[in-house]
Each structure stands twice: as structure tokens, then as C-alpha cells.
Image (tube, rainbow over all chains, first blue to last red; front, top):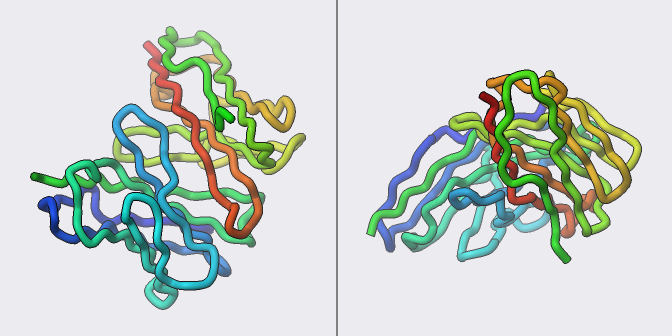
Length: 115
Length: 115
């Protein structure tokens, strides 16, 4: 069965510092991995994804994520945080073997950037 | 190109009432999904439709039914609403390319309160 874990409910970072939001996954076969961001009272917006190829994936708003197969992780990173990055972040996983294309989401991590 | 649209945006029901949440996408995607989002629970999959004419249960299907009316539309019905169904409901669609185009897109959400 597929599963995603986001071990931190909240991450607090000072503006200008690097940030990391952690995600680990469990899936049969090769994973497809996604990061989404949700701002208050809004739907989820796609940030980036890993399907195949380069382990370092670059996405929207200066975010990037590194796929690590041996650690089954896909941590979201940004070199210099902005206050406007404060939001709820979701990691998600699926695979080509997944029954009829289900995507499973983590429980979310609230990122708070202080000025 | 409106993406994924949902109606209504807000709804208040009394226990035992029924209602249908509507979802439509104009991206010609094969797969559509219904999720609910509750505080601290992340997104949980209720039902999904891998392609027109098929529907399958997700993680939390009890108390819900769905209809994939055509390729564009995927509705979620609550036959007899319960307070436990108070939540924010998101519809999503996905192009199952399995490659660079494989991304899930979300609607703006429906905030449902059951009294």
C-alpha cells in the first residue's frame, strides 16, 4: 500500500534562512512524487514533481526537492525563505503500479516564516 | 480555460438532509477525484474515477456516492448528511500521462457544515 509521512506538523523559520519540509514515502515500484502548497481558504496549488530523471527537481516560487531513493525521501527545500512562503504544504505519492491512479497525500506541514 | 470548478462554495445542511457537490474540468483529463480536508488529517480520498464510466472507493467512502456524468463532470452526493461530514471538500482532475504532464489540479473547494 502507498503511504506518505510528513513528520513535522509545523516548521518555523526566520526570513532569509534556508527551509526544509520533510517527506518520506512508501510505494511499490518507482514513485511519482509531488509537492503542493495551500494558502488560507484556497485550493491546493502544484509546486513541483518527480517522475523520473534528475534527483533534484526545481519548481515554482524558488522551491526545489531532492528525491532520495535509498532513504525513500522527497524533502522540499528553499535556500532563502520569504514571509510569503508561509502556508500549508502537502507531499503526495503515486506510482505506475498504483491501482487506477490513486494519489495519496501526507497530513501536511504548516510552514511559518517570521520576519 | 477555467481548470477545475466546484459548486457551491459554501453550504450549511441539517443532519439528515441530502445534497450534491458538483465538479467540472475543462482540461480533457481522464481521472477525477474527491477529497475531504479536515484539520490535522490532511487530504483523504473519498472516491475517484480513473476514466469516464468508472468509479472506485478511496480511503473514506462511507456516507458518500459519486457519479461520473461524462468526461468533464464528477459529482459527490451526501444522501443523509451527518455532523461528521463537516469538512472542506476538494475536487481534482489529473492527466494520466505518467510523464511530464502528469499533474493533479484542484478546484477551490466547498466548505460544508452539517448542523
